[in-house]
Length: 560
View 1: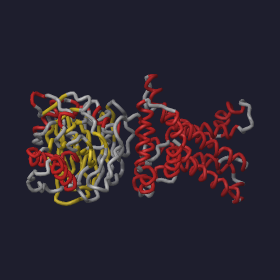
View 2 (view 1 turned 180 degrees about the vertical axis):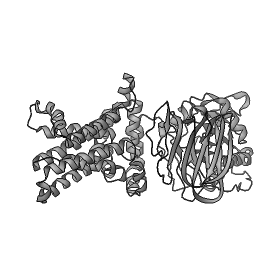
View 3 (view 1 turned 120 degrees about the horizontal axis):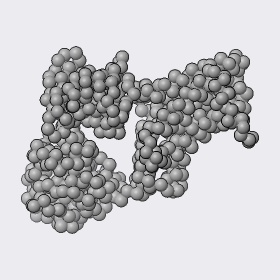
View 4 (view 1 turned 45 degrees about the horizontal axis):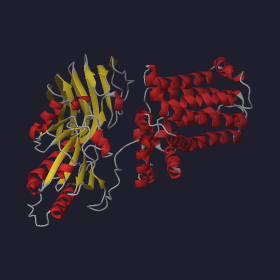
């Protein structure tokens, strides 16, 4: 446990110097610098960071549970934090408001001054809007809170991470205090400092509330990514995190991925499968019944472009090696609600020409049994039922096929295998736009708008957008998984890729314009699925303007 807590602390320290910390830096700096005496400033700085650490920890672990139990909106705590930041900014500008805010603290007895107590409350508000960079540690903390696997170790890990992130912030705040102490002109202009501090606090409150800091953060290089991966990406850390979150499967890193084959773990059986496709009479398969065979378990979901690009390889392997003892099982674990529907999956299976068995893992039981975290993901099982090879994401097709051939030979030394499939590897190697979700559950790259959840709202395009960002205009209803077009609905996307795909549902049309030139019209109808919007021969940068008729549902952009 101590080693995990140390990793959590170091991971927090790395987060505290990463680009994602930039939006809260001005607030932390201003919070302490606006004190009067040097001791008051230092006390206030410490109080702000302590409040942030405690607030972030409590909200991450308990916020979702408490809000759900009370029937309150999930963004209530963030809104409350923004209100607190705004009030303190006004208090710095208008002394009368500051007197009202600090009056409750003047009535409290204790050795600390009221300014430090006010700083602590400001820190509580800052913790509610603090969004650190994602990594395995933070992901595990989020899972603990979301799945109610709360434990003493989980609480300590959360505190360790938050304390680690708070240390660089405290250093920045104290450094600002030291500068003020040494520069007499600043020290003698306390009133001016308060006004400037209040203005900064209000501007940052507005910027954070309207997500105006997102584009700036995206433009700053991820200079801590390599360091973060080296600290959090170890096998031991991932194993401890999986135990902590209550996952039942083996560690994803239990295979030595530097070699072709390894002794990974005993393959779990298929669990919680709601339906089987492409089996005799829809009968289920079991790992035990497949002993003596080489089994490839392929996790996929049908609207995922990355999965779609792997399917020709997987189908080719099945066709080529089934007679020699290979069994392929495609485990369809849904990403969106419409992918739970068996008839939709069946249609996709027919569309993509999949002939191997497909299991519908709607409740993530098999996904969790394997400890999986990726679409697509392949687990190769030998004739004795041992997982010997893992591959995540696109690519590595040659290595995977070589592993299949080796296990087939191990199972039947006298087997005469056909030549390798030779299916071209179309995995993109160029820099391209990231996957972009349009539902509020995973909304990330929308700019110039404050999203309204589950209700029609009118949006306006921002004055400008950067690569990977998109903007909305007209009426849209942003739901958990998708955005549904209303009157005069338009979407503008700045992308870099060869191909642009969009998962669409509902019915209607899309009129497309690429960099100011008319492109085409897309008819949308039937089962939600993946539509090709742009198809090019080489990587290009451009602005795609989409005009959508009312009723069209847009789920997820992917790129190739």
